[in-house]
Length: 465
Length: 93
Image 1 (cartoon, rainbow over the protein chains, first blue to last red):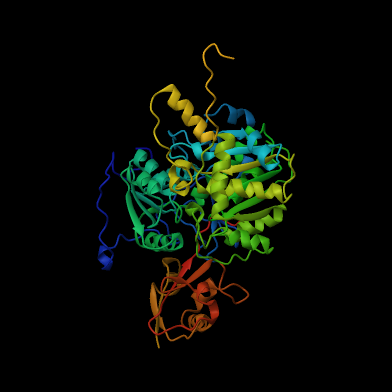
Image 2: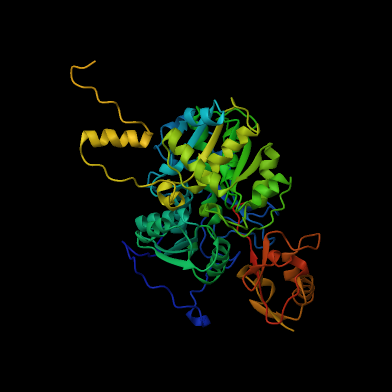
């Protein structure tokens, strides 16, 4: 066992028994760590939780809100202590995954990561660029992130490292799908039980991709905001580690690795612009946090980077706020095919809107029709099949160039965060299954002509003119 | 008229451990005034220096975000179940 003496299940127990419903107090799985009184904690000189509102530090514990002022807690680091450790050379000598950046991740001492998460390709998108009028465009392709094909693998791996350290035997999350897949897969690998809550209308592939790992999946009759609220209450009552509730400060730090990778893959320089999809609004801020850390430690030259947020019009609370020049995010009832971005009351929304505006960036939102076109354009030009969220990001990126919010020759990175194989239903009706063709060359030739609308060639008699 | 108010564990250190209480408040400002009287320490915790509810706290009425119901202008109905839930974000910087 890696940490401490607390026991946990060994191997897979896909059909574990949940604690009984908390009808009586004696039956409840009592939460041993009400806010500010955690019994599960560890000390670490490299990082700790801190409230950025009142400035109070809280060590390391499963805690997401300041007990005094209710503000969200953030993991802060002793950056000067890693100055000689977090260097280009040491990073290059590390593994080809996010653990090469472990010195600036909240990973408990002694943790031995064994999953090669992240370090996904940053590809030059010349073809897409030609189509949308960009000459220096890159795609950060987390559609191929390991192990479950979305950027959520990054945050989950960091959260579960802490879940283990805190001694949780059961972990969980509220999810719009990708997070569910990742928690299910990685908890199976670590021998942790998982209980995952999702909106009932989630895409079938995302449900299957959670169940297959043996996780307990609970479909909630409501949207993501209902699910998330319920998870907040469950975390109060059950001694479970919810990666995006009581483990959220650690979880969110995993997103920084997108920023580190972008900078390293650009040859240790920062882009001019980054386009990022927004659901809860966390990723975009953490990319900036990563850039700022790299600047502070001298790994990249300081330069202003503008941040652009992408949302679906059917769920655009942050985009609307940015367009109005405010960080006052008014919640919406989501109605979009981009279910992985369908968070109507984004917890990190106000901070994201403020950061975007402060960077000189912008936020845009696109219709469901444009989302599908975005999926198709990225696939047709760069051979990258992304899910609906990536369709949002691609369509918004195109809009930003069309509206001259991004100059064509600036270095721009657009972040693709999930894989199209999970949301194939979004393309239903867009491609026909054509008739089968007899296995004869003449039939094949005739079929191609039929498809291309060409006339039959005139037959030329052998030996004739 | 009576409404039932449910608090998260984070707030119960100022309510002697009570997670639920009843109130006769007519609306959200009335409820906050009630909390001022009944649980003054909780009031300090959930309201900022400007006297307004901190922005990290969400209010739900029978599972619906109060902002969809008109916010402070929403008139509580007899039997309404009100929940105060902290917004779980990943930091503020």
